[in-house]
Length: 486
Image (cartoon, rainbow, N blue to C red; front, top):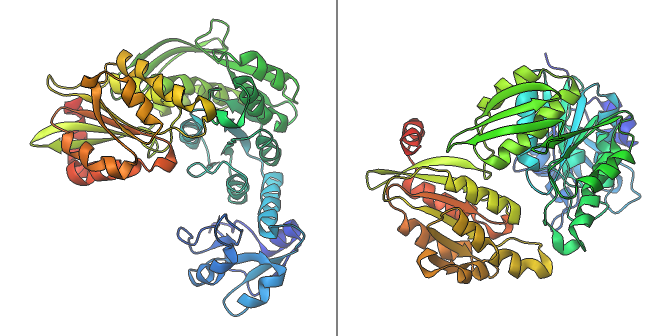
């Protein structure tokens, strides 16, 4: 029988709280009753719009192992189930309690811990590490993009004592946000994928973004390993942060001749990539089940982390062949349109200038039939500040360079790209994704490859959902159709 994630004694010791009622076996942790599973420890934190205490009864009714609540509110729930009443002394005592439980989880863990940050590729790299390390031992990792002030401590609170590896994603959009998160995680290995103009409206320069990303090294365990992209123009700045930390060594990756993990050749195909590399002097060739040059570059960072952890490089290289893209980050769906095949690439989760360029390059590599078109459906990129208009307009060069036939845009910023395109490349420009959906669905024809991407707040996923609803093949027919499109 699996040991409970938390005992009453451990919870009370970590939080200074007191349990009212009988604790049910704890198997997880949650802050959302919509996804809560029986046995989850429910944290009634205060969100931007709602107070978690409003959902305590619902959580207990769904079988929560216990609810963590402010001490002054505990009496309200005494007849509904077990509650852990935690001391008050801050704006959100429950969030503080979750942080303390996360700290306790890290203190008791013997796992080798990796933390990942970067302007682009955090989640994909985290998922790749989860995939390859999971084949070598029990691996705990962040769910989705749980990388902020509540996502990191929640992920720590969920970490079982038995885990051999832990993989944490750490994000930011302002300076000093990574500092407290990496201090909680205390990684043995910390990786920066790259530095790009993302969240640039909150920073005076790219160098300032590099400094903010470099904060991740401040939390390194003594003697830990800093992993840095050697190809990035801000390499020296990130290296300075690594040298100022407790890192015992630095491992670099990229195509640069001085990189410790160096790609000598990257072969990209519509459905896979093949990488010939040297990893700390060892020649390695491996296949990636997720296509795209940007994914191949991030895989070098993955291999650097595997080496730094002392895990098996050969097994990791073999595992990468089975890597599939996360939902909203390159997921591919076979379509059937008027008895012909077509192809959907879902990049709808988020967007910035670097990731859109990478996605356009990946779209360019998809084989289409003689009459098929490469179609990009792009939504506004957010948090670019005063540079927003020009950064959107400049994407016209990437559209042309990658041979994209038709572009649809959603949002006032993407309108600048739309107007910079030649007339024959213009599809439809709309203010929102919803206003664009019908036009995209109606324009698709056999042989097309369509890619949808935009900042998460643009809700480009609604276009993806509409295309799937209209044209997606049943699951048992998709692989054969994808092979035909390739």
